[in-house]
Amino acid sequence: MRHFKEGGRRQEMGQSKVTVTEIPLDSAKPPILPVFDVDSHGPPPDRQVAESMARRLDEAVHDMQRTPQKAYRLSWNGDAIPHGAIVGGHTIVNLRQGEVISETGETIGTYERFTKSGKEGTTYEANVFLYADPK
Image (cartoon, rainbow, N blue to C red):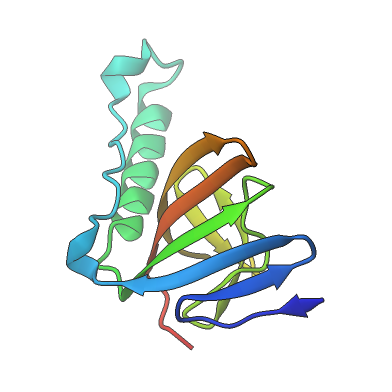
């Protein structure tokens, strides 16, 4: 059975259930992402290419650190990715390298994941910071 709802309700996705709760933006801060430093990665084969890459990476990081529109706490068991969870009307298909990826393939925010291991397996929690406009 596939059933999705927001607001602290469970979202059933096959056998995995995700609880999505909107949280105040001031209760959790978005993760700080590193800035690429050309000199700390050894001598590049071409300094101009390396500086161009660093500039593009810094721009991407800056875009990701925009002010979030909304924040959510997700909690689930099973797979490390809450496939199909809905936040702000967007369906999550992946959490990858600090980015939240939607069903359209676009980056819609950032996340911070926490893992808890217990008797009944692994429970995952994540704070998701939505930058895309809520639907």
